Amino acid sequence: MNLPENIDRLIDQVRQALRTVIDPELGYNIVDLGLIYDVRIEDGNQARIAMTTTTRGCPATQYLVEGAYRSAGTVPGVADVEVDLTYDPPWQPAMASLAAKRHLGIAAGADQ
Image 1 (cartoon, rainbow, N blue to C red):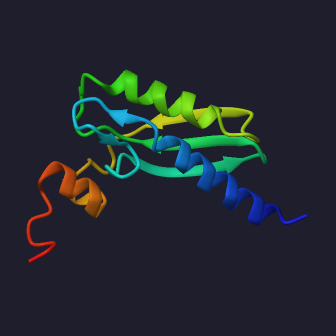
Image 2 (image 1 turned 30 degrees about the vertical axis):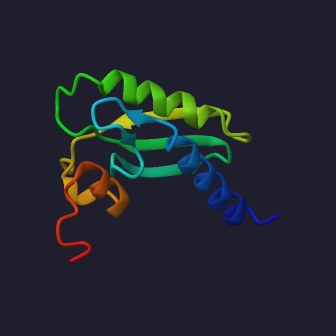
């Protein structure tokens, strides 16, 4: 039984599911925005997600946390989900993927 391989695959599937959660203000998924800091699988089937929002007091915080919880819970093999909200380190636009930066109009110099 290849547990590390299975866990890695499950983590990848959770990350893919998290891409379905779109930040309503920025219009892009929370993974590529850099809002997901860590995804772990504990005890073989429990997803633990560390995430942030763009700012403290973000009006979409509850929506994003609930979206992460629900989307991760749809992954076959995940029995339980825990979402930990953190602001350490604080989110910065540099944490976003190049595609997300382009979407947000902050990828200046990327093609120049």
